[in-house]
Image (cartoon, rainbow, N blue to C red; front, side, top):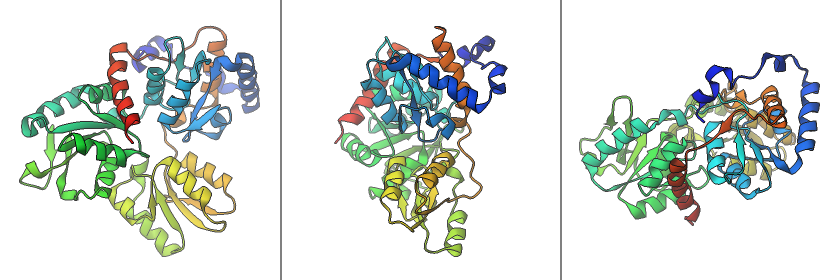
Length: 369
């Protein structure tokens, strides 16, 4: 079911009465339903979720990790995915038809995933094929819609995560001369640059203008075609944030996510996936100082877990991911009560034809070593 179908007629809107409940009432009720449903229920919680939600998660992790763990749990009849829409889609595609994936708030989308739709991608593919012929392999970040994953799967490509992007790009270059990387230009650029590809050999496809943006006259030397998309959270970390921090305290180590811009990654001390950030700070010596360039809910959780270290956000004015934050305690309770009553809402269902091709892209990624 699409977001618009679910919201039609108010079907996907949480009743106002949930907003009147106290935190204690909601926590008690969620605990009761979890206990009642037992193994029939699985709650995956993404790292960027609020603490009020993550406290009830059975498993925590990044988007693909959670979907894979859900896939391994054949006993869960209901999977209440505390994340955003594309994550729940992936969970639905990897689980069995007898399992129901629920998103507590269907408005929890991802601005990055929404920056590449099928119509735009088909137009881009046709025009780029006209210029480069059969020399391009498409890759898509897992932060993309099921339809985009399916497009990539149909055309011989694979999905990537921020953890394995380097290996997947190396694999892709063994398949074709060029890569079309969707939808996050920054992860694509940072990974390709780390593999030794000069910035001048990359160009950006602008889906609004339907054209390739490059400073080169000879476009035949372009090897990486980057979709003009970005993460609205990670793009808010700036070079000025880094310069200001360095001036204030040169001892602070800066660690950022590769969804940040090339300029920010280049000036940082470390860059890597969410897991890399968590593991690096976990392994750091007590008393060390860190500025973290990623989502604020996760930064705050890292701060609380490592009080023996001085940790702060790289951007002092950073806000949590707004769409991820739509999943809150009232919505979690509402979704669980609907399941308890036998009338679940926010059900995520990916069409079989889309699933088949999208899983091809996921499987190719998982086979790359």
